[in-house]
Length: 258
Ligand code: SAH
View 1 (tube, helix red, strand yellow):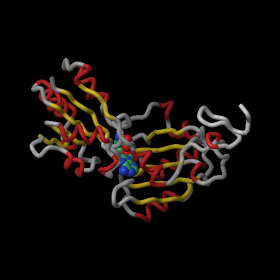
View 2: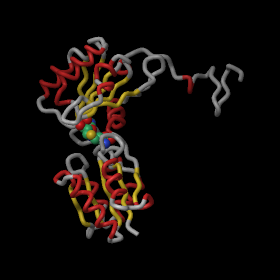
View 3: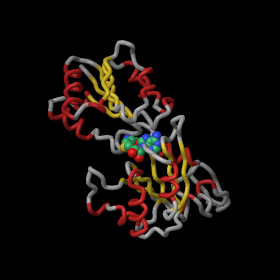
């Protein structure tokens, strides 16, 4: 029986794939990778005789055909996506396409990966959830050719002033910042942008809602970047309860005496 694994390859650094993802790529008969973002270095984990496809030049039907034909021929397929496939990975339509073609549930599964929004936090040496500042992370994008539902417009999300990680939007930086301000973020709210987190040419830009667009324009063309917005980026915050000496947890007795 053929089996297909949707694998999160991580944000760029080939060592940031999971041990399981690497092993499955090493075993696969067929490797289909999203060549626009996945680091081709991960192909080195594969067998020399593996069939390789770059999905950047294929449409959904073509990808599904390769996947279904391979499964029917009893082959093992590694379908490699950037970051984690659950975030803007377009895997739902592939899984539904497999089901529609009669592929059984136990013939495909998903192996998670390190999403770029987490690699971005690591690059910034930043926690997104600071006590009393923000305990919520909003993952979103600016509307592009892919529409965003009306209730999720950036301006509405901005009203929460939670930490925001904005994907797929750096090309519209002026519009993104104007919309966030319109939605309620003060102009002096800190913003960080990480381009190509974990790649050798990673770059970090810091500013505020009012200044970051100019900073970015001066840098020239910036692509494959994550926009992070929120007060967590520079603020005084309360120390976490988890390590508070007064606080008892399941694993440690504190001076609160419980
Ligand atoms: N599934 C992927 C996201 C795919 S959408 C994930 O979990 O990361 C592509 C967008 O992800 C890019 O436009 C950019 O906003 C972000 N991205 C991908 N790789 C990145 C990286 N190395 N550094 C910063 N942002 C990245």
